[in-house]
Length: 253
View (tube, rainbow, N blue to C red):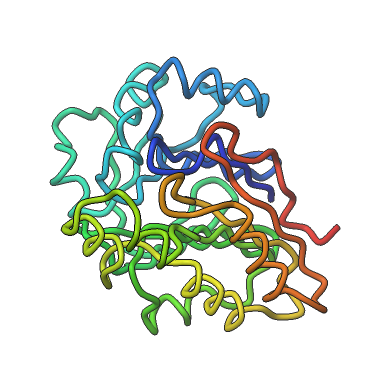
């Protein structure tokens, strides 16, 4: 199993998880033209996608889902709450997520998360004994999240904002409150604490994603990850808004 990002941040999010026989897109927050261009960078044909899984209804995660699904007849999976918000009637190939499910040879465990959406989910993917976690868009680390995102081989986790940069930044007060609240987005300290709690001898790759271009700095995230992962055989990298990141194997290298 391997995974890659087409772009990560407030302007659009999209990832691909793939085995040798199955390719799954997670969210599509880019226009049809943009996402197909980005897929070419990964050498992925849209017609080869077995499914699009939607985490929640916010536009930076769903704005391109309908067009891509319709043009390429790709089934879409989402929670019932998310389907209500994005209007299931506009889609031809809908599937409700009610629990553990599989697409091809990849198993998918949905995990409810605290975020200001109707019924948001994040996911752990499994294939051939390997486990990958994709975790973003949550304001706090619940016991359910902590229990689900353990014994992973790789994880992509949100490092959305630096507390000080957000509080002293240009956003209006109501937006600062939303972002920093329990149903907003993880700050750097929360994300670092999560990594400390779930890091094991099994974990070999950490990706920092959904980094705010206004309320965070890549240098800060790098410094935090370097400190948290010191003396551990765990590689880390940053997902960017423009490029995401290239394919990463969930197999230990």
